[in-house]
Image 1 (tube, rainbow, N blue to C red):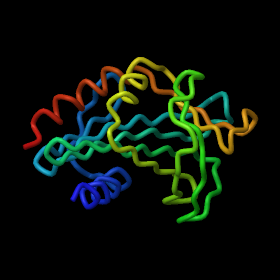
Image 2 (image 1 turned 60 degrees about the horizontal axis):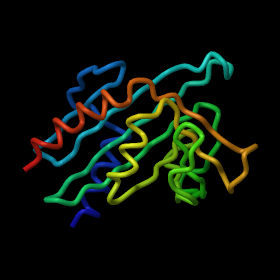
Image 3 (image 1 turned 90 degrees about the vertical axis):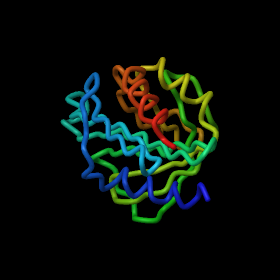
Image 4 (image 1 turned 30 degrees about the vertical axis):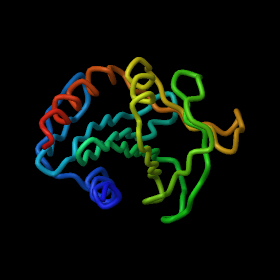
Length: 164
């Protein structure tokens, strides 16, 4: 049952037009009636030729089950829609999960799904950068800024507490 909610949340993460509030530089999109809460941070990386980047965390909750859909957008990626890749997930240079499966939903967007993300959320909430290390290769990494992510995740928790 959570699988259907995850699919819907993933679609929301990519195409949301729902009401968004701003918390510490993050767009917060609460949809507690649908069991979905989302935060997104968009920025232009001046250190990388003004590449457009986006980080989105969408949470899908059904009863006590919680899933996290992470979406990373990097304007210079050239993925083929539906292509998959394996990458370690890092928070501030610490490997949090190894060989995570990521799927390209667009040429510049990767999506990964995490069930039971509680421990991961604690690490993300206290971090300032998230990286993807492809094929375990330190020379093949993509890094994303996540300033004030702990505050944004706090807003998500308020939304999740309203999910019935």
